Length: 288
Image 1: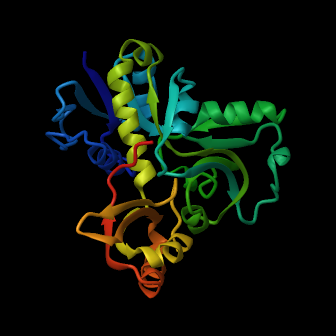
Image 2: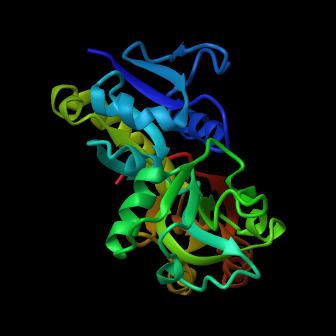
């Protein structure tokens, strides 16, 4: 039984999507986005390259079993899919913005006959309804939404932003946040039942990569008399692993997992309390 995973063929989340799959052990045989599909080194897994905006629909309809795409696109398509894993990249917000010198301060200042330009008409329409705003026209654009107020197409926009810099460059200010979005692994609900064994392997591997991100394995030798000093210094998920070195009964091998940003100080502190032969090793995956 095979599964197919859809990932974006281009754009800001394309390369990170390939990277997280390959780190999880799903090596692509052809990463050229000029091709629609790629085999992987696992004969049970194929990859489809397609537009990120189409992935929620493809997953919902079972054209593919899994997909990597933004929550914003899932909500815009109202796709009935399972949101499985937050991949911890691509964080962004869909915001309502107007010109900096506009008299519009909040959503309630939008009156009948005003216009909002957007690439996300469904989310925007739902947002207006939730705020009891009626008779505001939605202008659908395929791109460059931020210029709409400048050229008089609309009074405001809803658009994705991560830093807000593009909005500022176009003299726009944010007055509300519609949704916060991130990139997720999504699944077809029937596939999750019918192909649960292979999908579980994929999801477990991806979770392991995310768990390992930003962590290092530290290994060291410690004399028994210094063990308590070392234990007091090192954080660990479940506590350090300690084992005897057969050739020397007075020396113990200690290993622990720590956050990468703590490694520099910790290694020096460990050395100062007697730890020796300290190794810092990258971690590919952590499977709980």
